[in-house]
Length: 66
Image 1 (tube, helix red, strand yellow):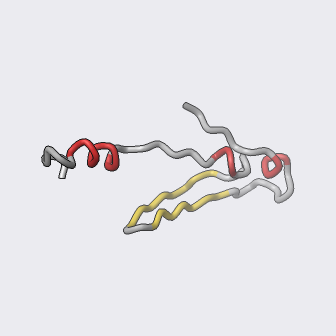
Image 2: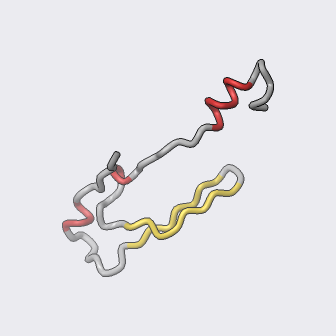
């Protein structure tokens, strides 16, 4: 599709890689341990081992870095 003169520019815009950060929407206590993409699904596995529930790390949001 990228080789098609009519749709090539559109395909490049749609198919380019994108960086997505959700850390600022989740508790800082969570650590991403796995990320799997398949079909129309993206499955993230998060871990908070050793962090007490209700502790400060669950009260603060994570940070997205550039």
